[in-house]
Length: 120
Image (cartoon, rainbow, N blue to C red):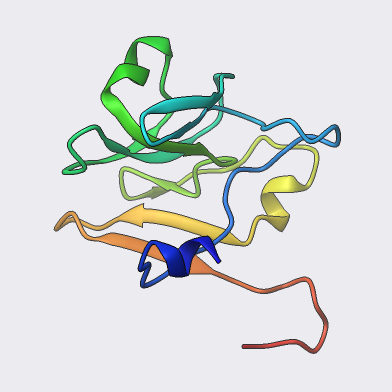
């Protein structure tokens, strides 16, 4: 398992994809672009791995990213709830959320809502 090989304390799947298997947005891994498409809110790390990046990057931001994956939409931004304009239902079904608190600590939340009776 990739997470075990990299001594991860915590791991989750990431990066929504279209029905044809292509990524919804920008994906950067180990400093290389794996999928180039812009739009949607994402999460990543700077090249020196010292700063979290959360937002919607553009092409000029990519050289400064070591890791990045696009998600769906903002839930909370600048301490205020964001109302989604999504009409597909994808945002309602999203089960992973990432954020940063006022002290710069990473917050991760995963909800298992697909399997009726399966809970870890």
